[in-house]
Image 1 (cartoon, rainbow, N blue to C red):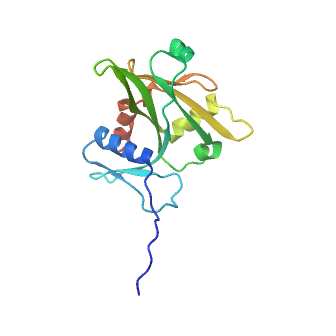
Image 2 (cartoon, rainbow, N blue to C red):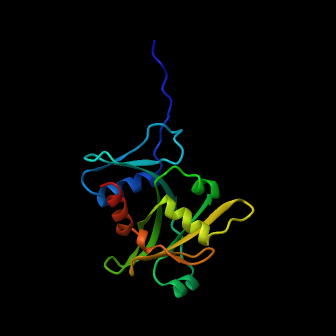
Amino acid sequence: MGCAYRNFWSLNTDEAVATGILRDCTAKNIEVLMPMNAQMKDTDLVLMNMDSKKSLKIQVKGSRAYEPQRSEVLKYGSGSAGWFSLQKDLIQKSSADYFIFLIYVLEESTKQGRRIITPHTLAIPTRKLQALCKKYKKTGKSGKYNFFFWINPIQNTSFEFRDEKYDMTNYLDKNGFEGLNKALK
């Protein structure tokens, strides 16, 4: 007798984009795996070093592209921000090894003479994110942390500015992936 299969697994757009970026920015012996069990909490992707068999569980969070206000550009320079609103417990009790924040930044392309949307990432170890939250973040009545990450693609810098401003450049794009590659050696 046959059994009916239901859609027990789905890949959201941000996870698909993050997968493509990870494939380009990690060592050749590192594979990006997608858990087939939708009930796995805190794990959207798994990175595995096929030689050493070390693995990392990844939580991916995505933000839409936000048009920066003129006052923000004057204050922070080129680029734009991503906004994330996450329950405190999601971060403090997470079993993921890393969080990857995917931020779509509006950029001016002088070559094309128009604006483009470019995905940028902040890849941060969960323990470091937890420490930054304890030091800099506040939760409202909702019990959520709100993050506003500004990405300046010209200067290749990033910072969070919602509650207290702190630097995130060490986790931006290739900087963050260096940490992932090192953790998987």
